[in-house]
Amino acid sequence: MLTLKLINEDTERVIRGLEKKHFAGAADAVAEVQATDRRRREAQQQLDQLLAESKKKAAEIGALMKQGLRAEAEEAKAAVAQLKEKAKELETTMDEAQKDLTTQLCQIPNIPYDEVPEGRAAEDNHVVKSNLRECKPGDTVGNWDMNPALGIENPLPHWELAKKYNLIDFDLGVKITGAGFPVYIGKGAQLQRALINFFLDQARQAGYTEIMPPTVVNTASGYGTGQLPDKEGQMYHAEVDDLYLIPTAEVPVTNIYRDVILDEKDLPIKNCAYTQCFRREAGSYGKDVRGLNRLHEFSKIEIVRIDKPEHSKQSHSEMLAHVEGLLQKLELPYRILLLCGGDQSFTSAICYDFEVFSEAQQRWLEVSSVSNFDTYQANRLKCRYRPEGSKKPELCHTLNGSALALPRIVAALLENNQTPEGIRIPKALQPYTGFDMID
Image 1 (cartoon, one colour):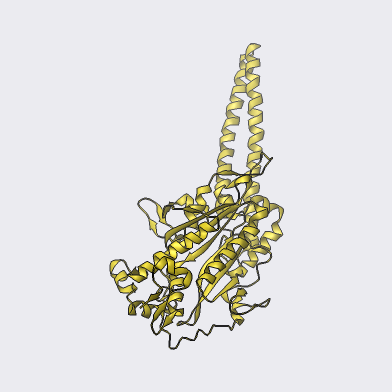
Image 2 (image 1 turned 135 degrees about the vertical axis):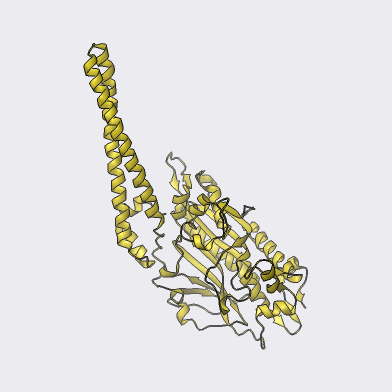
């Protein structure tokens, strides 16, 4: 969440940032937070004065008793008792104000960086890079007209290829669980495992430490990274134990550092994790969610960084280069989008999406989002570091990205590499699959 220091000292910038995200009632929300903060601080100030007065009166009681002034001592005792009652009332006022303040802050999204473009929806996102053509400043998804010509005659969509080569059984998944839970079979399962190992090996070679976290988390973890309360309806909730199935490994891996003070010399921290991910995707239907386009359960490798503020932009650039390198090695047509303010997530300060082209569907599929959250998550997590030579800890910056999410990568690999003889496996992946063709 945003810090009170930022809200109080740079109010106009916060309001402008919230308006860039098209957050309704930005000025009113900020004013409400400031009013609640004033109420809390006023109660704190009064409490401090009462406690000081109570301490002074308590000291007087002993002196009065020594002087034999029992009646005066009893009056002083009564006065101290009254002060303690008032102090309890002020403590209650402070607690209530703090709860209100936390609730209000949690409902305000992060503000975007200055370089984030204006815009309300996906068509306003800027296309900043592609391996198809050089991008011009101001290129947006809405005016982008470049689709690759892969030279595949009458390409089949991946769900038909999956059936033709017995790779994925969507109907069997419906039988076992429900829609959005496919069953991978034979070379389809091997391709999944090959991609997981390939992505993990690439991350490890780039200096990331592999983590194998739980795939269920408690409420505090969901709150820490901002999934709760913002995306509560999109998460699977085990109500008896009050645990949530993770929508991404970002949640458990980042929460490793909840309530932790790191040393500056330990930064940046670079972790990666493979997990199954679970998203309800309530209300999703139609052709855009067919096959692997949108699932309730899917495999994903996540890269997570914890860094000091002055280095986090460099970390973000390195993460973007890492994800781009994966797509290049998989020989996929891709483009990189800088998301506009209105299409950013609740928690991000800046986010780049990576999309690959689906030949049979003639559409672009998002396969990764790489985000810098500035101090927004760290403030929720109380994730801090102590600068060298300083006693006072400061908030870290947190970053994460998919490297990569498997379903749409598999969809693009199948569709873009189909030949009359079968489906070609990219060269970089062949040592992991053990075969160079699905036939």
